[in-house]
Image (cartoon, rainbow, N blue to C red; front, side, top):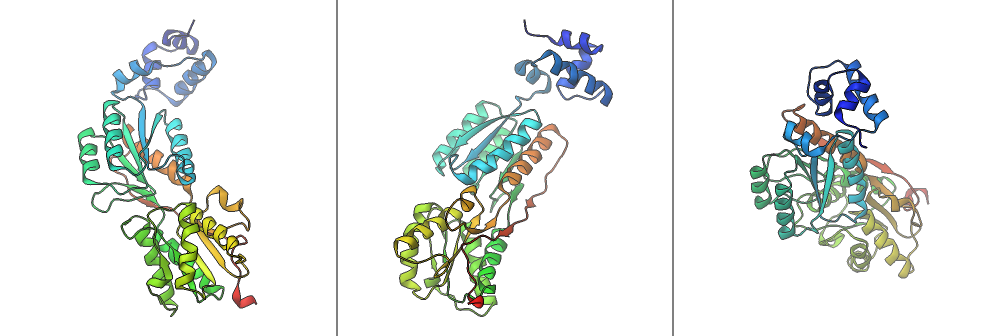
Length: 338
């Protein structure tokens, strides 16, 4: 027989009302009493009824998370952090895979509205007007992660992509490279595509190096195949290229694969730096030098902000730029050492 709230109260030697307040996060008890009740809950294996709890605090204890690609390596690391924060706050997570499709995103937002989720984490896509209208209808807090809104005042947790790209390019320049190309995202992507290309361009110009459209190939995605297909095109435009900045690790590893097929040695003949520091970056050969985004920490921070907003512990949330670092491995060589 499952233990009841009455059993917990008896075991902890407190009133049923006290147990109820602690389970539902309401005030009116000491830390010592809270600890004693939590120990009794654990000892008895008591599971609070989620529906009954929701009737008291008017919450479903669930949050919705929308990713354009749940199976992607970047998404999985961010999601791990979100789930950690949600679990610590007593929330469950509903994950939605939007595949960057506007219609599917709207469908999932309507589903989350029906499920009466308490808040939303929205990742890696620009917030369209139709999405924002649904956010307003739902009247729940929304936190963006690995993205930002170009039109709406929504809190975000992300890395400064312009600065990350600038530092990655400068890293190559400091190692003696002057003929540097970039495999980039899309000119229609204001979140990551445009800032990373701007950072690349301005780093070259700051150091007096030439820049033209021949220095960049653009893509609609950031996947392995985009990088693999882009390298031969970039080499045709920039045949003397000695170093490459790729706007994602998957692109960088795709470029490394293409270089191998073309008989180009990495890093002896072509140095490559990526962006993200996915787990696969240290598994490839040579191991990839890259700009490290703290993806799990970004997810956890976004989750913690959302939980605090839902519980009323914060009235407003400030956006946060997370720190990035360059992780040095074996895919970049220094021309000035040769």
